Length: 298
Image 1 (tube, rainbow, N blue to C red):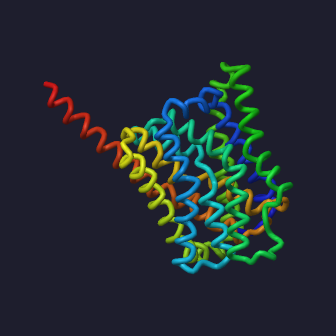
Image 2 (cartoon, one colour; image 1 turned 90 degrees about the vertical axis):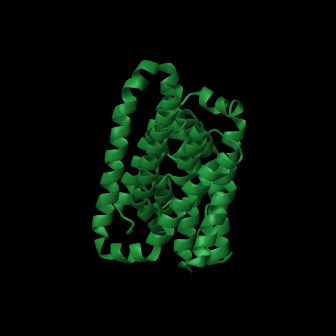
């Protein structure tokens, strides 16, 4: 993806709108909910912070990705979940309240974990003397990109709950329209390289999504977490905020590296297919279980 005014100016705006929309749906109680569902929340967060970077590293090495693409894959894996996870969780019959909680906590943790993962990845794949990286001053900019719009949305939600409730729908629609528009325009502007991008990282990002969804569901379920919460965990872990990853990669003030944005850009489109199929399967299975329970109750 070629770095341009479109991606360096309008993409951060799109991210701000996305994070503002998240903030409009959050309250302090969403953070406190971790204490009420500690096992489900802590397991999901542990998988997100520890297993996903390890999974991305394994895929980057196994597929022998070019160094900058490998760093981009690690950046994607370190990005928190987003509002898309909440939508798919709702369609699949998951615990959406847990999704909201995990998204909120993950967004805060990402301010620390994302720069750490990216800097270690750059040192490992590009060499310790690389001039690229997220130094402390740049980490503050990640903080501003992620948390400031969320905080503004939460303040509006607390002070003007009626307005926040009315604004959630339009803001979500606006975020989707702006995001899709920016990505489509960026892809069109760089259409000559799209085939190469897909060949380079297409299989890798689909595998990342599939395995993330699988372990996000299996780990909590094997630990005795209820199925709706395991479904919520699957989508929270399996669907990453690709907008954040692309913005961090392309921003001249952060990584300023177009190649590092490629995995997140391809993932941002590809993730809808496995996530949609899994949501359909969960919903169908849930209806079947409900039907059997109803028959036994007669």
